[in-house]
Image (cartoon, rainbow, N blue to C red; front, side):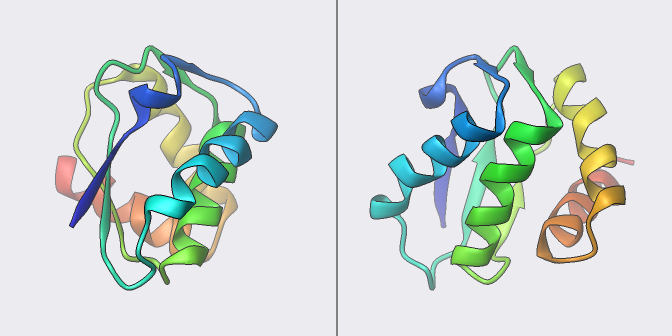
Length: 103
């Protein structure tokens, strides 16, 4: 399993175009048949739009084989339920797994 450290894209992740840019930057390093985990360490804030763009492209790329690592980041914890509620696909499944694990 490969781990993506989101801090490599900055510690303030705030726009849909920046989320797409981050995915496009990491995509050449990914294997579509390998699971990926996402680490939120050292990220100060992330918006639902950035997360939506990044996670949607990532989960589409590797058929939902994405795991979000547990976090205490309030910004991430606020954005995830909003995103999960708005989606009914791999992204919602990935988010729901983390939220269930943390409860």
